[in-house]
Image (cartoon, rainbow, N blue to C red):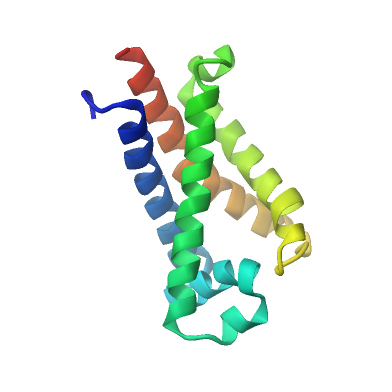
Length: 151
């Protein structure tokens, strides 16, 4: 990834992060039920119809998932050169970013979708934050650091 442009690096990072995140959600949260988790993602836009729909709804969920993951990666890459703290330690940055992603998605985004505000459960929160730290935060932090160090 050494000779890639900013947008090529962001695209590659977004695909990696999105793939890691959805695989973690499928295998750590949904007991391998890929279609169910993808329909749940689609239900944010389509409501209960997504949960009762077929594989087409799962494809919508996959598309929405990657758009969301890519958006978070883009935001990190744009923030990286402007926020000196992000350059200090990729692991601390990844953890903080994962917590930020979880907070915005669960406290701002989901409540305005058909999913709505979900009940608070500490174990669920910790699992989801951990997944976001390692699957979105860490790839974004590592690849942003590598990209900007080479420039």
